[in-house]
Amino acid sequence: MLNNPIVQRELKGILRTRKSFAIQTAMAVAFSLLVVLRWPTDGRADLAGEESRQLVRAFGYGLLVAMILLVPIFPSASIVREKRSGTLALLLDSPMTPWTIYLGKLIGVMCFVLVLLIMSLPAAAACFAMGGVSLTTEIGALYLVLILVALQYTVLGLLVSIQATTVDSALRVTYACILVLAVFTLGPNQLLQGQQGLFASVGYWIRMFSPIPAVMEVLGHGDIGSEGFMSPSGGAFRYGVTAIVTSIAGAVYSVRQLNHTLFDRAREQGIITDDLPLGRRILRRLVFIIDPQRRKTGISWFMNPILVKEFRTRRFGRFHWLLRLVAVCAMFSLLLTFAALKGAVSWDVEKVGALLVVMQVALILMITPSLAAGLISSEHESGGWQLLQMTPLSVWRILSGKLLSVTFTLALILLATLPGYMFMIKIKPAIEPQVERVLVCLVLTAVFAMVMSTAVSSMFRRTAPATTTSYLLLLTVCAGTLLFWLGRDAPFGHTTVETVLKLNPMAAALSVIDAPGFEPYRLIPDNWYVIGTLTVLAFVVLTFRTWRLTRPQ
Image (cartoon, rainbow, N blue to C red; front, side, top):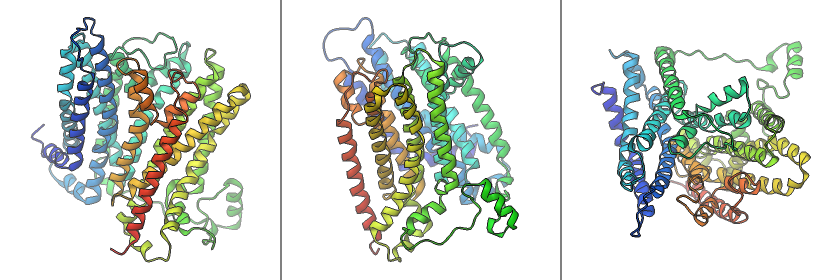
């Protein structure tokens, strides 16, 4: 199979990019520094192996985050780039079967993942040399779980790549799916743990789609959010079964889609509501609050034309899609609060608030880069920036129109989840000041994510790398810093964890709401100052870059 020309072409194409070189270098340097910083400097020997076990935990969680952040970059763009360049049709016309093409791309990406894991082997060997760590049940099992994570996410990325039409949309959908698989699948079990019945069993098995509990079990760190309940053992084995089954199913479905029908998809002819008979127009006015097929009016003189243009050319900018998104967020917020308070007697309002915070931050991280990372780079890619340069619009009018288009969407998402907090205040009025500070943290998170993603967009001329960079930066700030929290007191001290968490707006919101595990840390108002400063710096960079781009070339 390694003689497959697709494997060689895919692997060489990945290894020759600057992106892959930067990823390999960063992996080697980061894990080497981790071992060096935690290596014992005194002459005492740790016979119990507690220091090495603490180091392995930090090392394992770091590898898991690296797999989640880095693996989707290459498979999600692999097939859609072939499709847009026209080389996919040539591959399908060649003597190679769809299975040969698919396996070639899958093995090529997996070989690069193995290269990344090999870069971490010296650090793993140093952890083993400290003693007290099992080579098979801890380090070996960790690498086996990570390989399954890479396989599952690679298959997912290829599946999305087959269905997508652009590289940036494939990246957005892939990261959204991974966020659901890794984080949101933990929700049902978190709500129903300690209970008996069909729903509790279903919630436990849904949890098996996430690699986080499997890695925690392998590293001997208990279960995430167990709340004192005993979780069944064998979670790593169950995740392995789930990952293999979903990978096989995804591969079979992807190969069935990998044929010439990808180029022959018929598009709907479309219809305008204003051209329908009077009776059908009246019916649609009664059924739809905002009719997506109705002819739009002209742009008013007081409206920013860039704002209107962004709303009318972006799917989530269309009002009927915004209403659907708001309705889903509002219903999910209320259902989450009601289900938690009704079904789990041992839960208090603070734990429900922690779930709401995680849900809102996850929505912000999932949606903001997909909206803001292409605001400027997509104009360069499509040639629209030259048209903007020929208009009499000023830099501030262009920039404000684009930022407002994202601001309205994020504001609606945040407002849609407010009913859950209102329900909590009604139940326990004493937490109203905490809820107010949590909302400040969430607003700062949304503004920071929007300005940072737009600043990144101004530095790239293609949307795909801008979207990838935005996701990596935001996930590093909001998820990567939690690695220090997972290693709190072992191997990281209280001061170190608190200092790092001051960079994380989600951790600040969780500390305000007194979420379990975040009560000892005082992150407010230092986090507000840090996030505010970073937002201002990103806005200055964005303004300068936009001004430079509007100058004559």
